[in-house]
Image (tube, rainbow over all chains, first blue to last red; front, side, top):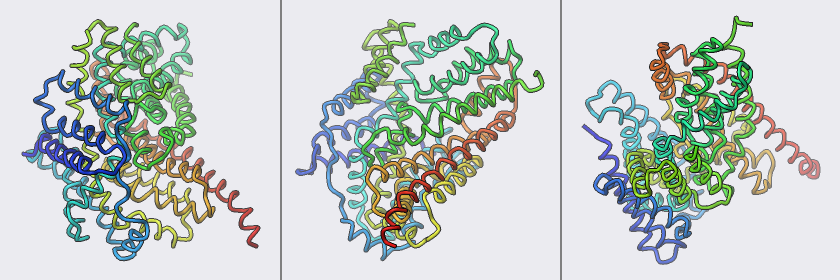
Length: 316
Length: 228
């Protein structure tokens, strides 16, 4: 049975390799800082379960310090100059697309396989194990097809991860922050605040507060999944469903989608908004959020209108 | 109410453009202290959650193979291909991708695409090449906007497609929360109500994409006139 620990081992070895590449680099800017940063990340992947809770907390604080002191940097220059890449593109042609397709094909195939043969993998970990297998298989196939040395793949991976930099760790750190917020009762406090803000007896006010609350609370936590239980228990259930007899399926489903509009608007949803900006090498960290505002705001208005129209249909 | 201090630290940190990783640690400490948990206990709680969230990092395992393919000209090939397709515009490419992403996510095929797998190596270079042909000599700011729009389109397509699929996490979460409140519904009753929003999301985003094509055409018009 493949467990998530095998995947963490693989990721740990990868980060350790990035640290080693950076340590050997005498020219790249911030190579020393990068080595420290990826070394810490590799330690987390390889030995996180043995560090203890406080140890892991200190590790995250160290990652934050290395990043805040600007010790990391973009590292090395592209390995192959543009002309070389263009020439190679002409040489390999559509084979490159076929090789890129190995990733989604294996990820999908693996996910399906683990659904029908669940004994192969640790329960509930099928998704990440399939993704790791996809990365591994696609690397092997590409190395053979392009007759490249594995070292080249790792060096390219290092170049990309250095260009993403500390933003690579943001999604994981934000999930951890969400857990601490939940422990401290941030959700309950926000729910109480919203319940206070709604004028008594007003259906439109309650619908508006629920929809906006889902979006705003998702912006604050970066995740509609964290916002939903709080807003539904605080506003959706007592006011929209119980007091105004709204259809619970509509209130829940479209409320969740109002939350998704919030996900498009917040740097807290780092994996969707900040990581792509880093991956694409955009100078403005918030460029993806800026591109999404024009879709998210009208869509949020539409969702609030839909709750009002569909949940209370036949009550007019 | 004091625990909201954590949110305040978060907002202030982002507003002051401090490093977000450090802000996260400080915000966690602030909310933990406000809840009376003590600094070390809060740091331990943060570390525990950080360690069990390592699964989020698995996406980075894709970078070596993406980098290898890019070093062998994947982005250049994507550009050349679009350069040859005369009908390909930014709006047509991204609208097609949006539709494909919404439909595949609605069928539960979330893993078929993503920011690291498809947007960076394929979609972004393709739309950049299309934009370059639509309005030659693009400035850097427009180029960045168009690349950001490619990433945004992947997010919009995924978010407003996946809730139509019955077995997705958010449907299961809703069912769990409502079941506990004594309201027992079937998954399809939730996913049904994701369809109107999915259609409106497609309409709004496709309309915005068409406006990009128009803006590129306006930009190209004076140059074309000078040539003629």
